[in-house]
Length: 449
Image 1 (cartoon, rainbow, N blue to C red):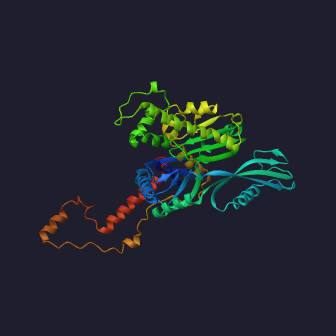
Image 2 (cartoon, rainbow, N blue to C red):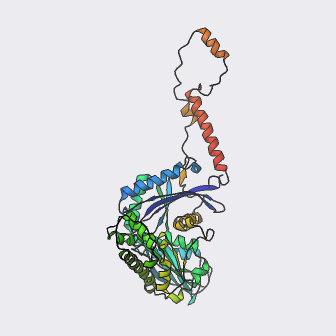
Image 3 (cartoon, rainbow, N blue to C red):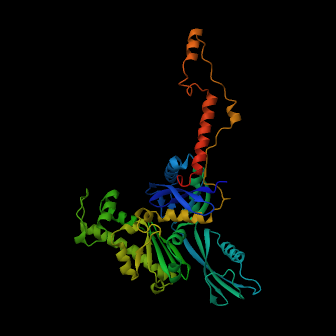
């Protein structure tokens, strides 16, 4: 039996629709990305939530077609996808549970699962995307993992990740039009944290910041678990929109933002722009909006009631919005914390992987939970059955010519024998070639991964 399966993930962000296909070894859980495609968008998704279903459908259809047409996919068709979700309204709600337990039996995994299900039922007006265990105490003593422990009293804090119901409804509308099944939802900031943060960072405390186009996601980890999660409705595109008020076209406003950054006016490089504007005005707009974003990021520690001195590993920042020149320095200055750019340990200096941490994290998360029995993301094209082909009509016979011409044809070598096959012969030949190709491609070790 084949020990690999294809995985397809979809990320609907405010600035782009992106999708990836990968091959996972079911036994080892190793995963290798086959291809990744993106389509830029502007306006049809706001704060990570779909506002124009038609446009998102169109862009998603484009990236799906590109995946299906990739030569390494071998004509497979996308049947289902896993979604990465990171949108405004996504946040954590804390529920504290107190339970008297028996010392006769150790705490089991099923007991913790039942507590999670019990907590999930308390939320009716929102979609619950996950229940993550937080601080846990047994008989007043904190433990990192309660499973297997023995005591009389269990005190456990559960972080419930929720979002507005309309977000998933709109995603489902798009997938229904594409005739693609939703196989699973992954909370992107949780997947990113699992990919780029080690146990040490989570234990001693850190803040993970993902600065995108319309949103900024802040996650805080302490004592080995998630302590706080919130999505702020502001991102790097807000800087671009501010610059547009100077009567600068959007494409050029992006160039101004990248060129100016947060550099002192004297250090801003000379660049030719088609629109006349005051350099000082543009620099002030960038600095003002960037400062607002940074202040809101730092304020999340106050809302979480976790001071900076309890986050010894500082701030780990990711997202394309962090490309703004000087933003890391501003965040360091305002927070008075160590700030570094997050990366995947296997590719620490690879700019492409840093830009795609979110999609790679979703692939990683799916590979950890997907089993052999789960539904397939992709299927091979259905080949006609031989009994169906036998029912096809034969090609009409050519009119007979005189005997001499027929005899001369018999004497000639049949150099065009392939062209002279009937319809049944051509199709069965094609089936043979298609089957051979599929078998060889499916058995390749890494060519199709």
